[in-house]
Amino acid sequence: MILEKNFSNLKVILVEPNGPLNVGSVARLCSNFEVEELRIVSPKCDIFSLEAKKMALKGQKFLINCRIFDNLEKAVSDCDLVLASCGRIDVSKDSFFESSEDIFNWTISFKKIKNLAIIFGREDRGLTNSELLLANKTFNIPTSQNNPSLNLSHAVSIVLYELNKYSKRNINRELEVFNLASSKLIHDSFLEIEELLLGVGYLLKHTSRAKISKFKKYILRANTSMDEINVLRGIVHQINWFLDNSKNK
Image 1: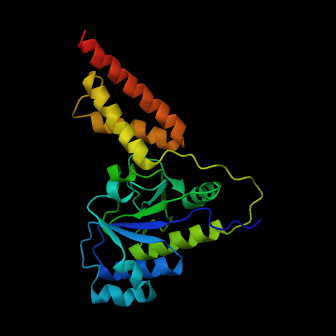
Image 2: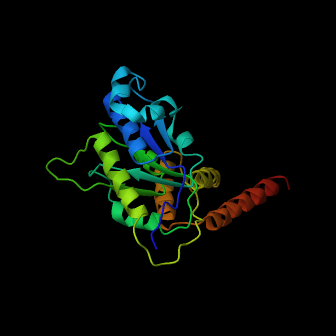
Image 3: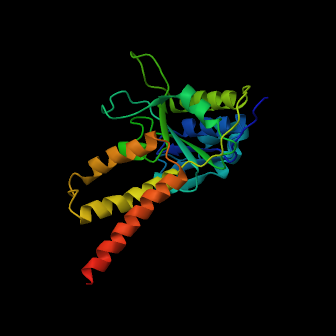
């Protein structure tokens, strides 16, 4: 059978774009590939400028209706699945990236994803490590080592084309029910875990973020389900309840 889009409400998220021409070009691409919404985090340029509108052409509605956020966490808070494009090659040894082919194949293996977001970082320095940890999956676009950097709008065009291509390919397997823990649920859970481990003395304030990040990467790699992360969260809540009640005795 031919698989039509198994997700709706695709959001393209730009983090701190600093070029109105790029923003306009991305708005046009949103129209080309039937993106549901353009979201922008703390823009560093006038995204409603004449330059942006000229580049957008039929995609001007995405500029007019785009949602602006002051941080990435808020921008992805209602998304079931979050993918992040990363162009950096000087990443730490424990960083984990997958090919876009593997990720898109995995994405279309589910029956339905209500809200899918794809994040694109700053033109000059991409996404920070903490921002990358807000994504369920992170990938990069392979380019020449002599000139690895891609223009923002070019990167968006490649990713949207590839996703569109994979979403329409022939498949002969039964699709899974989507039950992946959202990036927000994982993020909130790890805030609670960090607070607990700081409270019992397992973590120190000046090193807690680095250690928690490693644990969080493990959970993301494991494709943890909503049920599994809720079990982990329940354990944390029970430990907190026990500690609070022990103090009152």
